Image (cartoon, rainbow, N blue to C red):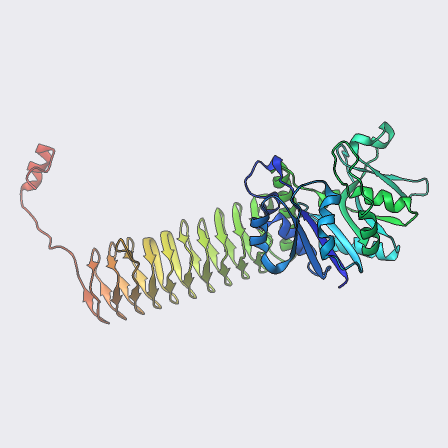
Length: 460
């Protein structure tokens, strides 16, 4: 299917979104609306032309050289939008025209549309759908034999035509030569003063050329996004598809309705996703994992047999048999090697934690290199920032850091070293050494009663 050029209409302002962002850049399930459309076309078209207008610079910046762009400076209708792409069309093969705000159209649907177009040798083929409430849509009017006769817009339809449930979805395939011919004949002599692509269909039928149609099995896949409500609806429908695909592949979802998985996420068999789990962006989760509840993982790689509960992970890599949480936060560039345990109220940032090391509770580790089988006690703080720069801390294999210790970077704790509880370490600790760095304890006999009687510590 290498001789198909796709023209995606993405120039509209999207006023009902009430947003500074171009409508086609709003995301569902981790991908912009336009990105979903382009992905569906990945193996179907040899060239993709995106017609941009409002927010053109933002759209171009995001999609770069992956597509060609045509600029529609004035939004004068769908036909006018396609006209802007004409200089980029070869005039050969087929031209598929789609809207940039229809994220649920699948490659299978578009392949079926293209197949119908070729089998019927049509000049144009329209993707249609039968909907429960056709109000506001262009109706597909057929002859007694069932042939597509015309497309009638809501405002122009007679009462009998308005009860027709089959509607035009705004997606088409044209023979390139036929499209270029009728585009020259389009008129804007209508109440809106715009050039409509549906008029191309009328012109082709008027010339006696074959116009066929392909009807969607599920009308919801043609849903266009025009406001925040429809954005949420499209997101819900796509999430259902994603969750169904994962469950079929062997993933358990305790409650699919409260499990949020983006489209570029991969999850291995026998993994359990508990309620209120969000897997966002590009995430890979291995087999046999337990994720959630109440967990958010973004742009991370998770190995096999990992447990993450009540925690937030972003930009992390976890090896096999790691345990995280509850209530941990792993920030970008965190690496947890095999068998690592990270417990409650631990925050780790830009650190590499070696095999089978433990950071069980109430600790902060930033810009650190921790060896294997190390143990960081409760309240361990890696003091990585001096107010101007970040510094690195190195903790060797089998090192033990006692509770309530501060490691003031840059500092190295040697292999097998022992840092006593309550220490503030500002100098390197040699391998195998015991380090104590805390103020001397002073006991003042008999002072407790006076302190309690006064109700204040005036004597200190």
